[in-house]
Length: 187
Image 1 (tube, rainbow, N blue to C red):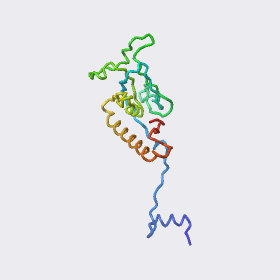
Image 2: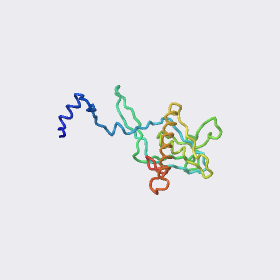
Image 3: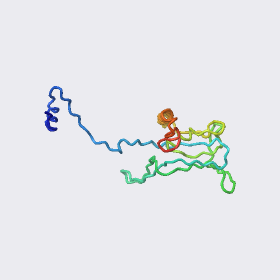
Image 4: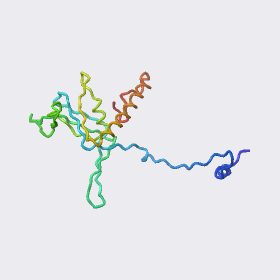
């Protein structure tokens, strides 16, 4: 005859022969398991193409949250979010046709010097810019990040690309999800 639940619990707690030990269960909070992406402060994307009116829009943005620190000073915290869209503008001429010097990248590399750039701190956007190709199959953008973020971005891109290729492999003939789908809904 089966035992009642309270008798089973007592038997397990007492460690009787053949009875598995009780495991303590804890409540899982979705906020604890939701991945939080690091804001890549100082990231830049340099446009290598020739389109004078180049703009790119990606889903997701950087949310700015004003907070008071312990000293009473107002600080702004940046948080990566999937809400909204972010527009990246690579136009280097004003409406009057004048060159906008502040939008030109200055670098010792002659391939990048004088090219239009846009600040980019969203790691998924940086990854998407890395994947962009021109009509000849070459890179359309050069992604530049500060050295302290290099390892984080390498691991992030590697993980996302592994997931993308696995999805492509698993569903290539399904007509459903393809490699053009990602967490943010774009390739």
